[in-house]
Length: 140
Image (cartoon, rainbow, N blue to C red; front, side, top):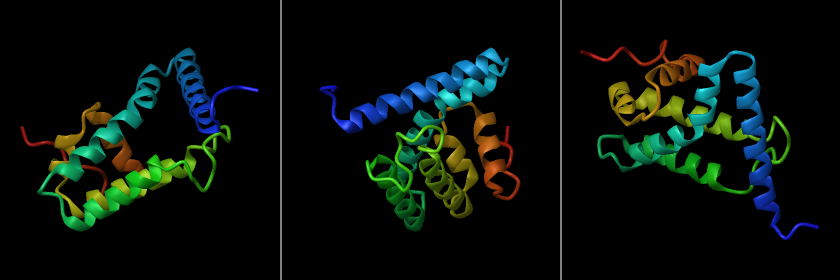
């Protein structure tokens, strides 16, 4: 048996699935989608952390972000992360609902200012979340 703890093995399996999914997308010619997949989690972590530190974000949005961040960091999930394909689904749903709530209570320009990824990815996320048709375009 391995000397690694179960949670380390679970993390390695998730990373392996994530990498395989990105490679498959590249092989299918979906390079932009593969890049978005590879960067979505780090970008969401930076977004949530930046919004939690920003004094302009309403307290209720910060509470939702803090709860979502704790859930995402917790090893206890509704669907265990080591379950192939479905393991990260509950994390994605929690992050999506948290982002949807933040976008409904916070100035979209403020959320956009904390996003470190491709602006088109954030726009796509907001459309998927059906938040008023997405974040309004930036003022030049």
